[in-house]
Length: 104
Image 1 (spheres, rainbow, N blue to C red):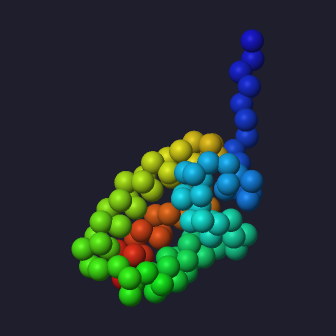
Image 2 (image 1 turned 60 degrees about the vertical axis):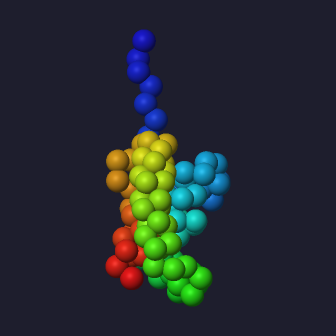
């Protein structure tokens, strides 16, 4: 019996983003859906969310948020990459978000 393979998902859609919580996280709440430079859009999303959260979140809470974001993001990015059948899709931007929060 021949093995059936499914082609990798070239570009995620809104339906894919909303089909699983891991997709929503890994694709940066939609930032990763950008047709042009999804990583840059993810970084801009991280910067904007940092500016909105900064007055509300203490330094120790940022540490917890970044730590939890790393662990949850690791799971979300792994699941999303498996579902997309692409090892390192440029549309997965959660790593940019957490890294930028850490830098800021």
